[in-house]
Structure formats: C-alpha cells, structure tokens
Length: 322
Image 1 (cartoon, rainbow, N blue to C red):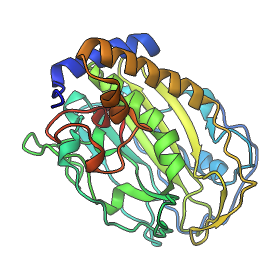
Image 2: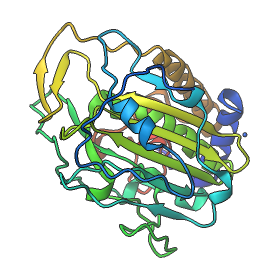
Image 3: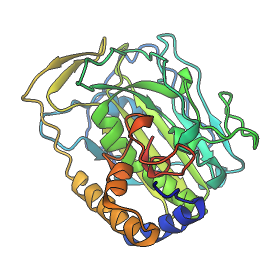
C-alpha cells in the first residue's frame, strides 16, 4: 500500500524546491487592432493589463515554430502590490458574446491552496468549445484562476473558511483553451504562484483571456502576478495554440495541420524542475519510482483513477495541477 503524503511534508518540500529553482517588457509588436467589438476593458484601481496592451496582444499572430510564450512589459507585472487587502477574487461578468474577455484578479495567500480530492467533473462549455475526439485531446476548459489557487472562494469571489474546495464550473472563470496551452504552458506560471503561497507570500494574480474582435475562442491569455514582497513577479502572454492543429478562432474549430509546430524552449527548464521534484520526493518522502511517475506525469492527472494513492492524500496534483 502506498504511503499517504502529509501536508507538512509537502510544505517543507515546496520550500526546498523553491530554493533549488527560484528566488523568495514591453510587448514585441507595434501592430494595432481595431474593431474589438463587444469587449469591456476597464483598468482597475489595482492596475494590471491596460486596454491598449489588450488590443496589442489581440493583434499578434502565432507563427509555426515560434515560442508560444512572450514577455509583456519586459516580464514585469503592472499590478499594484499595495492593493492587497484580503483574500478575494474579482470575477467579471461575461461580455455580450458570453466570453470571459475581461481581467480576473485574485488576491491570494496560503489559505487559498486547494486540495485535489474536492475536484468534480467539469461540464461548462465556454464559447468556442468543441468536444474532443477519442484519444485526441485538443481542447481543455481552461481556468483563469486555477482550481488549486482558489480554495475557500465562492463564485461571487468571497472567501469563507467553511469552503474547502477551489473554483469549479464557474462560467466567469473558464475559457476554451488548447491542451498544450493549459497543461504545458500556463501551468508553469500557476506553479510559480503556488510556490510563493507555500512560502507564505501574499500574491496578486491576474489572468486575462485575449479575444480578437468577435471571435469566440481566445487567441491567448495574459498572466501576471506579483507578491507583496516582490519575490514573485512575472507578466507573460501565452498563445492559445496546439501542435499539429490550426484553429478558426471565430468558432474554435480545429483542423489537423502537421506543419504547425509549437517550439517551447522553456519546457526544457520545466522538465529539469520536475526532475528535481522527483529526486527530492524519493529522498525526503521515501516513495518509489512508480509513485513519483504517478505524481508527476505531465504535470497533471487526467482522472482520479491515475492517482497512485487514495484521493484523501495530498499529491503534486495539488501543487502543479490547474
């Protein structure tokens, strides 16, 4: 029988991993895109993505073979660290096309780290959604604020100590995202936020799906976060793309195209990061190689049957999953 990983052990583990891997730009385009249609972009009193930056990002076209992540504002967040006051998520209403086209901003601390055993099946179909074919995962229901970062916060954005689960099946927190963008790209930055929270940092995290005009599928997502002690600070744009597929972003329909390449150089760094986690797990928690493989996988578990121990255990799905 596999041993259950204890929360205290994982918190210590995360602290060690953080020291092993991390310490606690202006957009490269002058293109302009008008006719943004139904968008309602407002700059809040805690700053973040501006309307002009939104429109500039919406104008960018992904070219096969390029890196699907670009730095925004030289990689530095424009969020105001002085705005952090309490645990809260500012979910925005859907626009007139039922899209999550506005910035969702979360004020988080370690109490917002959710455990995976409370997750349920997702059923919301955001705009641009298409069902996946058997053995061919192209579409994901992408969270703006990850389940694992939203413990105790209800769909109104308010925190309660009586609520142990993270955000689920909330139309204001979902958009149609490619499997690669969700599982291989966005998860890197969600992991950085989780690590900061485990270190005891207070974090402001903002996610903004970027739509062009009246298209129903987002072209990408802006992710930025900053901790009040500034040990965490990033600002990136993740293209919503998938290797071997091209999309009609007006409808979300995918078409097979073997010439579409997604060159993600940072994935090598991510693999090394997971390798360090693997070694630390085996040494500190005395578990087997098969258990480590079950924990890490591709950074996420596809379903509960793939977990190598009971669902009551705390797993790296809690730490690295969406």
